[in-house]
Image 1 (spheres, rainbow, N blue to C red):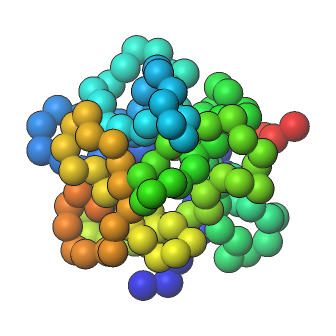
Image 2: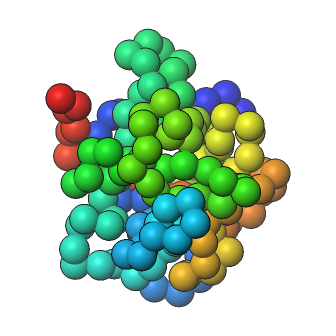
Length: 148
């Protein structure tokens, strides 16, 4: 499938896993490569569950970077095929594209690996894409995002 454009802005990213609604969440404690990124139940604090999605460059077809909406310097990074959030320079942030799939979108890394939520509380990992619901996501648009 070809990549689809995503409106730059602030989102909640819903995982399609069995059980109550699960959102992509930055954990509170950093280890090794930063704070592990997991799926968790709706948290009343948007600090860890609202993400800004912005194109790398302002041109059609550009991949996207994802960072915590309320912590401009904390972007998603990939190490050992696992997802982390870390305050590293923006060029070190992981780049993603989005593809439409039945029931949502698939989030793909620049290496073509799919973001996967094994179960609520597990660290998100990148895997070779398969037609599995654990690799399907819903992007809930919250607000426009303008970078400074």
